[in-house]
Image: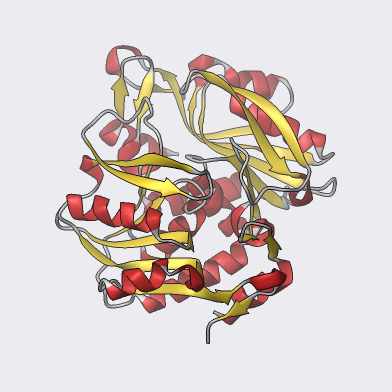
Length: 190
Length: 190
């Protein structure tokens, strides 16, 4: 998506440790005009899929998932990273290793919110190694539901997670795909 | 807002410890049709305020803040509860005590995302004691920006936080206001 790539070049900052900072428009301050266009583009990429729910993981994935689910007029559900007092019923668990936070954590979703009839579009802001997405896929599969595909705002293609998911048969669509990010220079895939 | 009250009566569950579980439509599974209507209602309640940004706190406040900011066509910003590798610049801090998690935590927002020109609508899913909101207000004030008001999905009026904020001069609008929740019976304010 050209407009997202343009924004990344304009306002993204490459930090040491292979971190792409996009706080100025995507995950601390959210440009809602761009967000609407990204949701529209995502809906087009997954038309004809009869999606019944959009699934993401807290918390930086929530704005994109909300916008996509609003556009598709289906419910949005999200996996939590910690237990909370209002999560009482049976839950599905998956383990995810986060490079950003340097630790393993459990993600969970109430069993009552996903069923074997669901056709689920999984969304997230970033795709690098794909660990969070593998956790989300296993939650969907534990419920006996179907994964319609995976929609991502920014994929670091050179980290291989997206291509591994594609090789495993998942439809993965990323609105911006970064081929390399060496010496502060961002190069997109064709 | 009648439709939200109706949904709370239909699908909300009162749990021990004064917890109202609304996971079925508001904060684990999000009913996006209802969400759109709540954003519309909120925009109407704060029309003529020249709002430049919507501010919330991660993570359960994010869907509502996203929908309201999209409706107002302004950016959404959110305070984070922990440091992260892509948050490098100077930040404003506030301390908040969470009854849900039983601990004190620091919330923060990058200084670059809010300025003294901003007129900020603060939003959240729940308002009880008002601690999180006081933290968000202090972030806005630290930036020299103006608080246009506070928009809430569900207020537990009997806990007093909302009325304290109103007494301090803030415009607080809650889409559903609960007067009492004794013995599992939910009673709304008039």
